[in-house]
Amino acid sequence: MSRWPNAKIAVILITLLAALYLVVVFQMAWGFIVSGAPIAIAMGVVLLLFPVLGVIVVIRDLQFTQRGNAILERMAAADELPEDTLPKRPSGRYVREDADADFEQWKRGVEEAPDDYRSWARLALAYRASGDTPRARKAMRTAIDLDRGARR
Image (tube, rainbow, N blue to C red):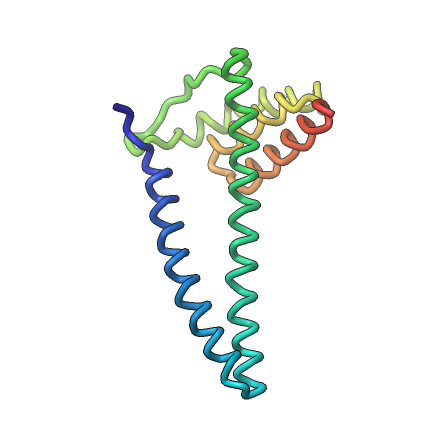
């Protein structure tokens, strides 16, 4: 029997808590709206909008994660991912100095093949190993966009 990664358990738990939150907020919002007072109606509408915006953000993030993972899985199946040889701390995080030193080769890969989604995906992994999550996400977005364009 396989063990679920902690991230999946966390996502399921957060999703259940968010669903409970949404039920309570929608009940409150409906109560405000049916009260008939203009300010209460406005508060009810705002209470409905914030969770909807939150759900949209979560869905977009899950789609991003799914598309990025699909690229990495295809690359792994084709043996196109770099070997994970960087030293790690006891916590499982990469040693930052070694990840930073290793980073340059993946940056060069993008400079040499800027239209190859695989080079951008490798760069995203290098950014992640260096602890730069925002740039890792940006590089993976580029990889996803290039992959979409290549598969059209």
